[in-house]
Length: 229
Image (cartoon, rainbow, N blue to C red; front, side):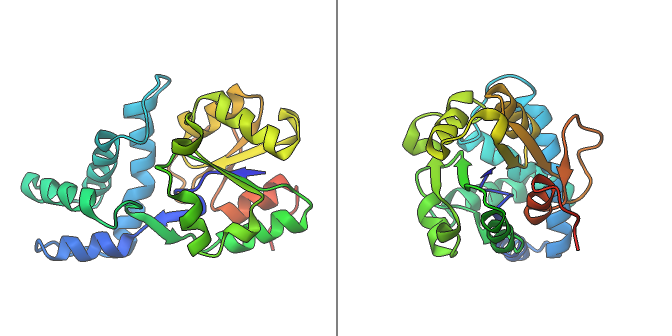
């Protein structure tokens, strides 16, 4: 069972965004930012990906993602958006805003391992993801990590999924990938012959031709074909 990292095992720091917005006189809650971020995934997927190859690891993509999050939270004032974009580019480098542990992640990895599954991460990242996962205590629950900046290819290119299959020693029909973007994660996995589960915590994606789950622990339960408690 393979996992994306951002918005799957990790999440963005909603608290950091809320705190920075407050310095510009904007008062929002973490819950508002979180809900806006769930919707932003769908909008970003449709705008930037939609079947054509666009890297997720460019400043322009990251800027647009944050802009969509802010828009969903009701922050549309251009000077504030520009200031937040500049803040994001310098925040917590080189890791960035994706550095908070997803609460369901430890239990999800433990359940996958208990279910006898090989576990790995396939992440579009900048070479920092393995160290970050280690710092959050997730690395012992993983058999390997593939970082696009390290291996030289990123999702949705099927080659990175085939690398994971080789590392796991399984065929495509024996593997499932869990991620948060339809065009990058679901379609990328399918191109390599894997099945995929789309994370949809806010029920924002609508009807999709793939299984969905509210969080990564529910995705593991789905893959193991067991009911949730």
